Image 1: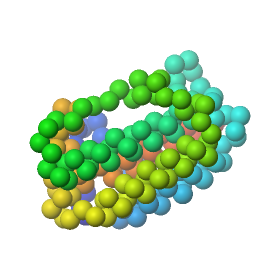
Image 2: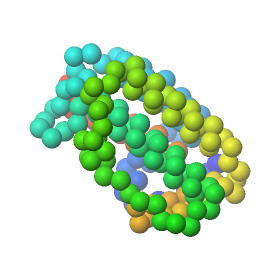
Image 3: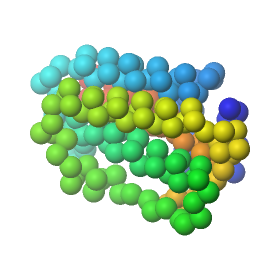
Image 4: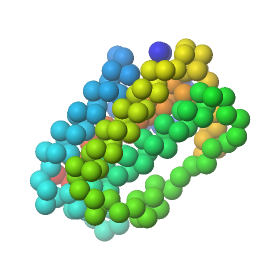
Length: 170
């Protein structure tokens, strides 16, 4: 699979694409499961509900946000791969986090949810034909191709891990 061109995603996603290493995206997508698990398991348990400023998410809430995003974008990829013609809605990530109970869930449960979701997405991606990868749809009023989704998810997770390192663990 080749990388999507700029007509296949909203300009906002460029910052995530910049976080993605060159190479086989599905291999990177899979390898990131263990990277994320190791990263979050390596954080002091007493810091998991820490917020570096008022109104910011806790580390557990960031992990919950990664889980929600994985689910939503996998659904988008599925819909677009099946030639869905309806525009898909956006989502307000702050409302999703505010209306979840990530802080009350164990790290083990959250990491299990992430791993299962990522593996499910991976198997779906592996099932796509070359034609399906090139299909596009509309989400949050923007064009998005199927092949943009795994890059967005990898870059999004890398972005949030970098933010945690810079703002939560220093």
